[in-house]
Length: 282
Image 1 (tube, rainbow, N blue to C red):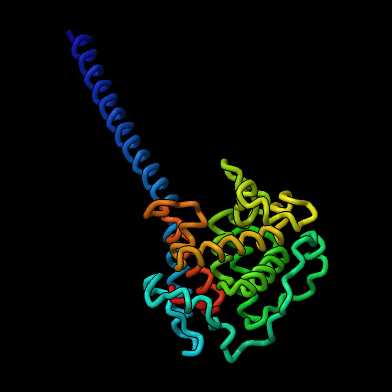
Image 2 (image 1 turned 135 degrees about the vertical axis):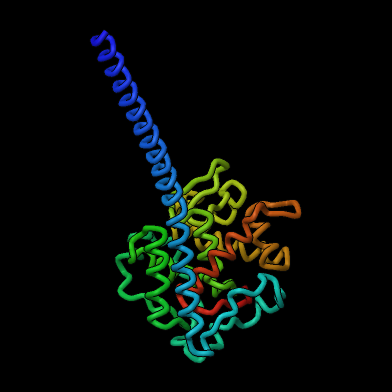
């Protein structure tokens, strides 16, 4: 009888211990699951919060600039826009801090990019201060993970080509960002190539003057020249920036799948980072 009672007592103790261990394992599993969920949530939200914080910080710095450098960055993209204003003398040409006159000749787009890199000894851009030039180069090089020297050569070339076409250079820089993320060898599933994703089979005639023919689309300098010409033609045909961007991306209907919003949003970020006022209201 005594043995029986002892056995029952031990069984009760064993069941109690087992029950407590089961509860402990259950609680640990719940907390582990919560920890995993929190880790996943933080990994998804922290980068976005960091980017938003950076943009707010940049916007605050922009608001503290002198009035002559203030930019209307948050008005609607087409507010007060007309194509005549786009093709009139842009703001950078009227600015009192312009440093040098524009050149009359287009850059040599047949020049190998490696040669342009080798010959680049400074990154002076007419109408842009050295601080703005450095800020713009740093933003593009850091965000799109390209060499600072390459970024400087590309920016210099874009400013020269875009101004020859009477386009805002920062608009062209934004198109490159959305189209290829500054990868000169990018190619889409439909055959668009290079920095500005030029459809070589559609615009074959624009490459006849290049020594490499359509293969020049993979030369950053040639791609910028042809892509900027196509963008200019699209804006002229449609009569507005948004219409031109829709044309550039090949949209034939009323919508462009958000392409124009992406380009103009990136242009806002470029303008904020560089402190260079756009030539039209964003």
